[in-house]
Length: 80
Picture 1: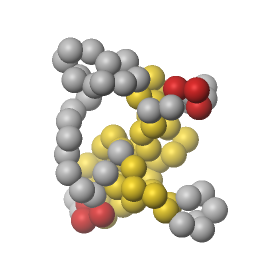
Picture 2: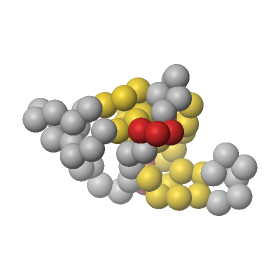
Picture 3: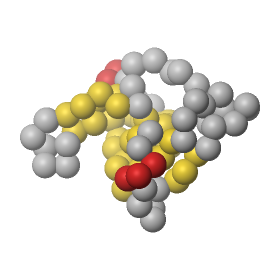
């Protein structure tokens, strides 16, 4: 989980994220949503499989990428 800022910088929300690049001391992460109805052409759809252990379809929002200090992250629930 990581705190993602709203695009208008008026606040933020804790969200699941996928690590795109791991370069000390920062991480580049992509926002994840479980709302397939929000799918855009640039989103990456991840279907649940036995090997990834997902329960729901996920969208990686490639239009919502951020670089942040790894200290802002919390937990590592799984791998894609």
